[in-house]
Image 1: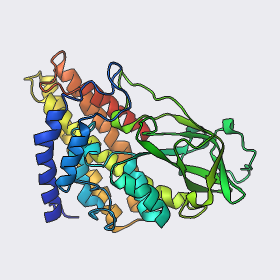
Image 2 (image 1 turned 90 degrees about the vertical axis):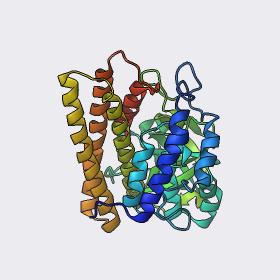
Image 3 (image 1 turned 180 degrees about the horizontal axis):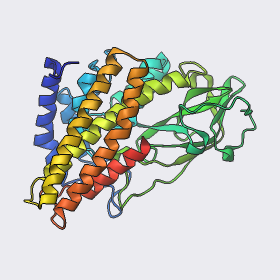
Length: 381
């Protein structure tokens, strides 16, 4: 593993840093109240459209996509430092460069496993930023996407939607979906048009595309954390599927391909989240460093620098492993960073808030909101 950036990464980093300094950081004050109890929750700020146009004009669009047919074809190691930079302004930058969750994961899945029809109907509008998407995984009580399945459980057409587990069964020339799902991110946003749902089918898992507004889909209301919603990311809530009919061509890949698809979805998504968290921690350390501070605060700064550097090295090593091998070493690296990085970011941001005391951030940056966002990502991992 080399520690220097290649020429393409250096060029894209420079362009993104310029965009951040000239346009995104100055826009934070304008969006400060957006997504609060007194603002407009679960909506995309109006001024963000102009920022998205600027990013696209400067070639900073869909950077996360490793598929050359749809994006710049960057590797995980090349994109990781760009994700970190976007994390320094997490409520604006990821969406401004069309790199916000969960759309990045959904687009990766459609680019790798989607049929041509699915790509034309859903991937193209997502790539253009015209729509948003949501990701629905099995409810926590029913096990996550990688949870083992109980082969003795019958997933028949009479599956009880209140039983918890999402079940997909053949129904004529299509399928029927019943049960509860969790972790609907972006489902509250008005631009959300697509739900990518992972459900049990027999003794395996399958991934199915469900258009928003399909009869039988009931979305829960979004949650608040310390007076904030999840901004342009939407929210983490629940969904109930009761006799939801989907067409046969809505299956992504093939029936039973859910486990393979989940690895393709969750690995890069967790890396992106972790790199953005490192960027958030760097922003917190900057704000922690401004007041003179006590001896305790100076010690926090030293510890924060060490923790950030350690987390970054671990995350970049994981990105390199994901590019060079797809076996146990890469999966172990992902497990490591999803345990280490969110905890590190929350620790740094908490100390930044305590170090500043009653002093507001000089640029009005909401440190408390940043910490709450880091905490929500920690629970999502």
